[in-house]
Structures are given as C-alpha cells and as structure tokens.
Length: 61
Image (cartoon, rainbow, N blue to C red; front, top):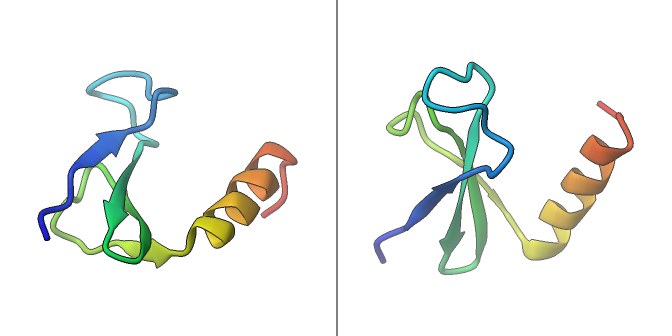
C-alpha cells in the first residue's frame, strides 16, 4: 500500500521547523516528521490519534 502523506494545515510553510505529516495506513494513521520522511513514522489507531490531538489542544505533554 502506498501511503499518501499530507502536511498539517497549520504548517507555517516550507521552512517551518515543527511540521508533521499524516497518512492513512492499512490499519490506522501514520504520523511522521515532514523534515525526515525516510526516518519512519508513528502508527496510531484512529482512537489513539484522537486522544493525542486532544492532549495537544489541551496543552498536555
């Protein structure tokens, strides 16, 4: 399966130092560093991604 990666809509542009990309995996969602596309990715379920995004929005680490 070829993953189509999409950069965050909150990205500041090409030179943004803090960008992530999301991609739909066969089972869940992949999250990777846009500056290092060959460096691997974090595989999450849709539910785990929801929890992660909620924590980010709440300012949790």
